[in-house]
Amino acid sequence: MARLDPHSYADDTQVETASLALVARVDFTSHTLHADATLTFRAPGGGRLDLDTRDLAIARVVDQAGRELPFVVHPPEPHLGARLAIELPAATAAVRITYTTSPDASALQWLAPAQTRGGAHPYLFSQCQAIHARSVLPLQDTPRLRIRYTAALTVPRALTVVMAAAHRGRTETGELATETWEMPQPIAPYLFAFAVGELASRELSPRCRVWAEPAQVEAAAYEFADVEAMITAAEALFGPYDWERFDILTMPPSFPYGGMENPRLTFLTPTVIAGDRSLVSVVAHELAHSWTGNLVTNANAEHFWLNEGFTMYAERRITEALEGADMASLSAALGRRELDESIARFADRPEMTKLRTHLAGVDPDECYSLIPYEKGYFFLAAIEAHVGRAAFSAWLRTYLDAFRFQAITTEDFKAHIERGLPGALAAVDAPRWLDGVGIPAGVAAPRSSRLAALEALGATVPAREVAAAWSATEWSLYLENIPRPATEALCRELDAQHGLTASTNYDVLVAWLALALSAGLHDVLPRVEVVLGAVGRMKYLRPLYTALAADPRTRPLAHSSYARHRPAYHPIARSMVEGVLRTAP
Ligand code: BES
Ligand code: ZN
Image (cartoon, rainbow, N blue to C red; front, side):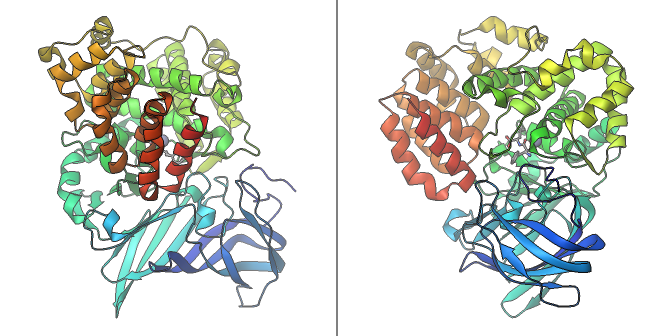
């Protein structure tokens, strides 16, 4: 027997699930799903089947003929959840499992009407990456095993269901509606996704539609209007888009991530709606995952850099194609700052700064950082610099082709690139990147004229005419480049000249607020409090809570703000903030 994924009970000597049929009633009163999940195997088989579950109440398991099968739900193990062991008679083709989810299912956030824009209806959304799908349905929850699925979700009639799948229909009976969906392309289980709420949509192009609560749908349609141009640019770089549609769901503010690349339906934080399309690189990122991550998938979380490092590279190629090389190198320069900061944050766990990690017994959410993203990006950029843009781009196409709809490890990547670009790995000293801690010395810094202009400013206040032409990335980078703690005088001057506290661009605003807090500028505290109550995106919560907790004068505020806003935060964000507050000096 072999368990090939440290985060799953899936065993490669057992039958493999090929497809899944989910029938579920969404109960907004008890915050549970009452469901039947049918798992059909690639080939009929017998013996034991171990499935991943978390907090599921399993009522019954039957085979394809409706015969009861014996099962045991083992005691939960930390991070993994509970193993559901089913005894299959020889030649079992499928199992049907009847169960109920827990109100605390780790993949689900249930929002009360008051937590939505409209205020009239409840809302539910899922976030399965990395290992939360098992809290929604029993399955072999490893990206190594791809599944196709169908789903029929029954919800209150006033609500709409959206899924990262193809819509097949809606029927209404009495107070209820049932929507059916089908995912024709095989996906890794962490890409199973849906949301239920009062939703409206706008067409952006024949293959793109944006969904949001009715009050936000116009703003979302404006912000993402250029998405078709993005897909076209990405196809020119990486080959045809294989998922038919690229729809976008604008999430409630508590969505803990910037975006989630759910296939056919990317989930995006509403904080990217800045009103001026300045934060759409998040869309480029999630779109890029359609190739790097969703087509070519990491076999497990120990090879997560294959998903995110390649996606940062692909995102910056899209940015370069649409906005020019200057903008792409500004993004890379910001990435380099974030990499240095993340590596510093993991000073006491240096093994987490390797690209290829060892995660037995480690919760993937808890070791989440930008290291696999940005170290992965700089590793690939180093290879590209060595072999040249043309050769690297050509190799990338062969890589995407060779592994499409597969799950791979770092070893598979190494073998493939060694064949296509012989000697390149040795030339960049790949073992230091993959298995070494920190970032190798002598990594080329991103360059561009706009970057040089920014760096020349250092910590002096830019003139209004100069800053007027800055992108959000330039503002973020300028603010990040100012050494901490900043002086109060500099911060006052910056705010007086540039009105940063009033910024409505969250990337700029949060970079500014963190800087101002480092300077002890308490005038910004009311604005910080507003942000902490308005958004649940971890990218913003982490630096703000970290800055508040770092100063003994504001530490009590960190705790009281968190106590106030905790109910609105997503469980994943709660754990992150609690970690920050626990480790504060
Ligand atoms: N797939 C990730 C989000 C994720 C990673 C969720 C791991 C759960 C576990 C997504 O593609 C992502 O990277 N989002 C970033 C966007 C950014 C790098 C542009 C984010 O949320 O900040
Ligand atoms: Zn990503």
